[in-house]
Length: 187
Image (cartoon, rainbow, N blue to C red; front, top):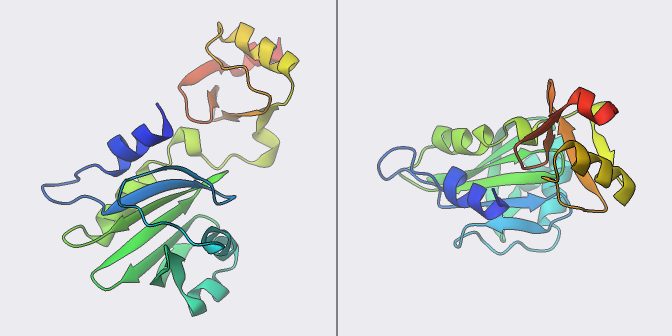
C-alpha cells in the first residue's frame, strides 16, 4: 500500500455518516510531505520542526500555539513524545509522532475530536510502532539487502537504506506486510 493509499483509505475515511476528516497528511520528521489529502494546507517553513520539538518539550508549543499552514491551533492536550492535540474554533487537529513521520489529521464539524483521534491514532499500527533503537534493523548495504531479498523471495525492493521494524515475532518493512520471521534474518 502506498502512503497516498493510507491517506485516501485509512485517514479520509467516513467514521459515521458525514463524519470525515477535513484533511490529513503523513509528513516526515524532516518536513517532507510523503502523502496528503487535496485539502491539506501548504505547510510553512519551520512548522514541522516546531511540532517535532514540541512533542518532547510541549512547554514552548503550548505557550505559542501549534501552526499548520499558518493557521494557529491552541494546544489542548497530548502525550509527551507521541501525540499533540490542538483546537481551533469548532475544529482542531491530532498529530501522532512515529519513528520517522508525523500523521496529521485536521477536523471540522460535525467530526468530533474523538473521531479525529481514533482515525489518526489507529493508523499507528504495527508498521508504525515505536520500536526501541536496539530493536531496529537497518539494511545499509546492497549486500545486506540482497540477503534480505533472498530470505523474502525477492519481495523487497533493492534500496541502499531501508528500515525494517521488528514487532514481536515478524519483521516488517516500514509500510509493507510481514516479511520473514526473526530466524530467517539470522541465517
